[in-house]
Image (cartoon, rainbow, N blue to C red; front, side, top):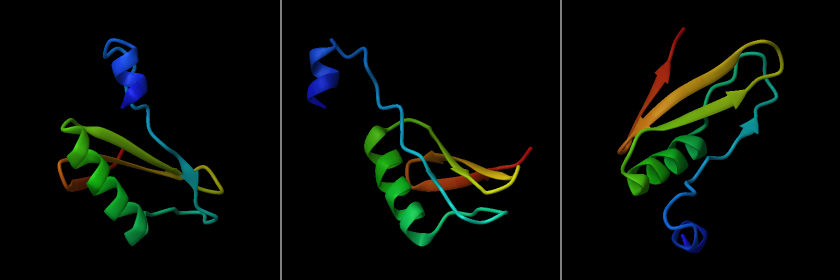
Length: 72
């Protein structure tokens, strides 16, 4: 928050990432709870990504406390 205020509200939260050691990753209950709290506190849509072992990754968007998986 301090960095954001010091930047004259120009720098924003980019996010966080992590990998799951599986071919078809999916969010854990810990992931979901953290994302719900983060998206609710930001007050705007947020993108969440989990990188898997192979070519399959997981993408979702959070709005408020609702986390929705994106499919392509």
